[in-house]
Amino acid sequence: MKNIILIGMPASGKTTVGKLLAKKINYEHYDADRYLEKNEEKRISEIFSEKGEEYFRNLEEKYLKELSGKNGVIISTGGGAVKRKENMEELKKNGIIVFLSRKVDDIAKENHKYRPLLQNIENIHKLYGERIELYRKYADITVENDDTLSNVVNKTAKILKEKKFIYQGDSE
Image 1 (spheres, rainbow, N blue to C red):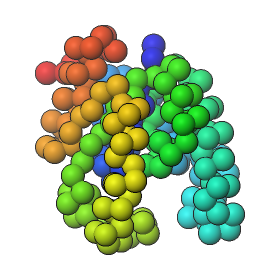
Image 2: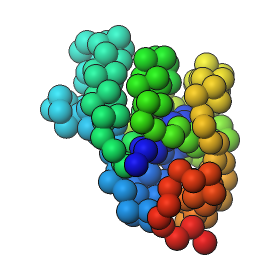
Image 3: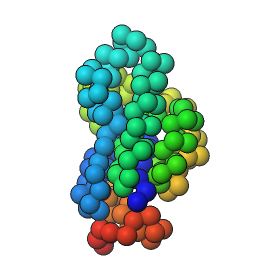
């Protein structure tokens, strides 16, 4: 069974949709950022402030490679995982890449208390501009997160089933 990899902007719904989709189709779910934090016993914000982005990206690459070795799981990546080609190549080896697309204005409406990069609309637009082509480039499937969570999960499951990426789960 191939893995289902969710990519997209921070606050695009990767973790929430990933958890709900996992329940629906009976897959195990991994949030790559939480997995990294658990293994490193540190929050990503601490890693960033103490060691910098390059150090964090190296850890992210290490743990994404570890997660990509699993079978039949859903992996919600961090928003910046697409910044390293190696991450995406590794995830694609045994995975279907789903770009969970969400409008910048919808992302901006969320509470970003713990997301310093999303504190203002200008930063969100900047991140979006830097990453949108990477999300599109690596995606096997694009799903718009522009409806209720339930409908987005159902839509994702239906597309995966139609494309024969999954064979289980009620996607009606």
